[in-house]
Image (cartoon, rainbow, N blue to C red; front, side, top):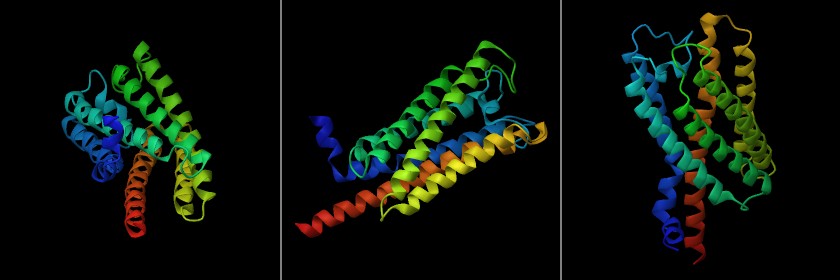
Amino acid sequence: MKTISILENRKVRQCLSLFGLFGILFYFLHIVLGSIFYKGYNPFAQAISDLTASNSPSRNIASIFSFIYGIFSVIFTFWFFIYFRNKINKMISFGSCFLFIMNVISFFGYSFFPLSEAGFNNAFQDKMHIVVTVFVVVFTIIALIFLGFGFIKTREYKFIGIISLCTFLLLILGTILLNIVPKEYFGVAERINVYSIVIYTGILSLWMHKYIKNIMFRNVLTK
């Protein structure tokens, strides 16, 4: 009962809706600071996961901010799912559920199975890292499709649906490029994938914050 009453608090709702945006800050801090502590790191050729690899010189600092980002993302997507469950339409409910599951898999999967070293060393944890990535990509695609068409079905929130489907297309583009670009540009292709979903979560966070604010404003006017 206490949990429910806390979530009904206006300030708590608005604060939780911004957790996705807070997460972006820590995500890019983990990249910037990780790159500083990883001498010779090449963002054009190397994967982002190299910054938190077991033998990476930047692992300690990068992992801290990556962990905080994961916490914020899991909390935000859980709140997004809880708030919009059975609210606008079923497609958005399903999409928000898959988005939450994806973030849980990403948070725990990459925490337990970082790369053993920069690149791919074919160790057990490297293979598991790839398995986690496959699940993350699949659940992200499913979430974006449901959210995209779910929002497009509405009159008021079509722009979020368009953004969702554009993010989906960027994800597909990045996946294709990963298999065709030279190794020297692997990092660029990967960043199209990763940055698109990270930034999308931030956009979703801002939209949710505005949505809750508008709902509360309408409730005040009707009283």
